[in-house]
Length: 400
Picture 1 (cartoon, rainbow, N blue to C red):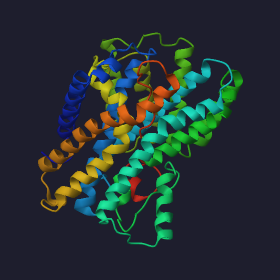
Picture 2: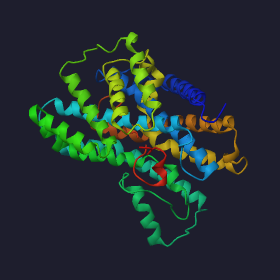
Picture 3: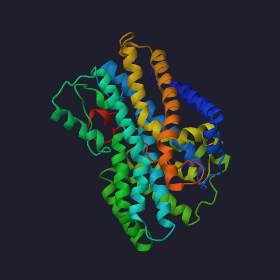
Picture 4: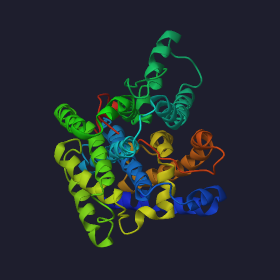
């Protein structure tokens, strides 16, 4: 099979689901976590997150091949894999827009201080752990020696601490450090949305909301990826006004959202109005409880969804280490498709296992702190996130 065959990610996905099921069964902590009744009626969203993060991973599997084979961090030779990442990012943003606009529609003034504090607890700990992991790899590759003046090193480190608002690059002479984590840019979009939310909430109802929608569309057409947040908010409005009420949850209707998603994956970019409209249709089905023939409600899918933020931030680092380690013995650029995807499968399963640990010991303690003394809860994993701003680390997904 060719390296861009769609059967390879199917096999990797099956392995990750099997590992997720094993962890969910073998770990008493995760068994208890996943056995809790869902805190809201949108349980299918939790199962969806893991698949979106894996879609981003598949993009990076192809960009890694492009990097070693052609010298470019690029997956344009495999358009399907560009789209799995772009669609994943778009739907992650849609989920964010939906969940937080739902909070706005519940009524009452939005507590900006509480909002920002919760987002810091949710996003910052795992983000800084992932940055530390990147720098640990850089230290090993640098043989724990300083190869640049301290002021230059400090300048190079600034973007790594910016939550994606600055493009990352080389660190201490490791020129390709940026490819270890090509997802940070999405966090900048997330943070921009959170920062604007208290202001946007002032226009949540009546004519103000119509004006907000019109302005978002007008300005969003300049950067269509931002329209995903609007699509999520519109889904929240549809739920709040009772337009859905389980009408789309029937398994008999499942071919419709799957067809919409398949149409998106056949396009050239997900960052345009037509694919966003199709993903919005897909998302409405999921919001209304359609679990895609039960897949999104399985224990394995929920485990992957619960740990998806960790996976999102760690998968690039794990894949980088895996491919770099094997490159000396077997040049990655000359690997057969089977060899390349075998390494990818090992990296994916290792990232799933590592993410289960980091969610348990890094993410959850900060989430539990705000809800103590309640039992562990699977709080939403926000981003997800892959590609738009410039810089080689993001170029593969920016085919808009």
